[in-house]
Amino acid sequence: MSGGFSRLVARWYLCAAFLLVFLSGCTVFTREPAPIAEVHPCAAPDASTPVSGAASTGCLETLPPPAPEPIVVPEPVPEVADETPEAKQHPRKPRRVVPKPVPPPPPAPPPVAAPPPVPAPIISMRRLEPTQAHGLLDSEVQRPDGKVIGRAIDLVVDSAGRPNEIIVNLTGFLGVGDRKMNFPLSAFRFNTTAAKKVPITLTIPRGAPPSVAQVKQKSQTASESPPTLAMSDTKALRRDGGKVGRVVDVLIDGAAEPQAVVLDVSNSIGHDVLNIAVNWSALHFIVKDKALSLMLEMSEAQVKAAPPYAADKPVDAVSPIVPVASVAPASSPAPSPASAPASSPRSPR
Image (cartoon, rainbow, N blue to C red; front, side, top):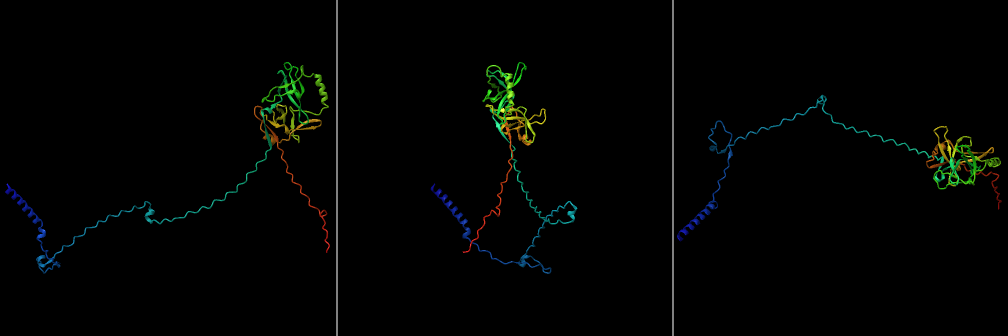
């Protein structure tokens, strides 16, 4: 057994050694390089000289160079000719750039004219409170016990424009026996808080109103008293005689002080009735030929500028504005030569 194993190992060692020697043979057994011999190209063959081969002449036969491949040039793309015949005949000219004309500067705007001056107002207005706009004419008149005995139909004023009397139309039975009577203003009591028209209380003593004899006696003495004016249906005139309007009502406050008059300024009689309220302070009472007349300096333009009056709307009482004429200040007169101080001659020293 030991002898067979040693033989096997010896065989393996021999094979390995032989393999190593075989692989290293390239380094153990070196070969000499072959000599380099120069070979010249063969000369052109001559017709008289027999050719026996390249080996007999000792030259290197060269092969002719290969023929070059043909160069393929792509066909040019034909240009698309213009459709118009003019483009075919004439070549295209270079485009010339024309400069745009510079627009002229805009003209200067015209100078803005100054707005016209606001015209001066020609009337002034005053809003009357509801307690200051009681219509006196056609107001009911009652006794202290509340029984209505008539209606106020007119207001009598003196030359100073102060109310003096109230004319009452006392009603009879079924319209029979109606009569008009004048009562002093102190005999009436007015409601100072009511905003609407309420009856006026006539504080007369017990019994009937003054008798007819007393009224006649009063009318006889009336000629000796200063002139008075009943406001109802009185015409308001200008100084030149023109008519402004006709009084249709008097507006009083709770203390029976008149605040304004209502004028009918419509020129035609019909449905186109126009009423305006004028302040009591704008009225003037002038005595002419022992008669009292009502004057009001109010032009047509001022009448048209006044708002219309309506009993169920707020009342705006107007007054005309009289333009004040500008008076130039008087220039001081120049001193006369006579008034000039004389210069005393100085005596020489």
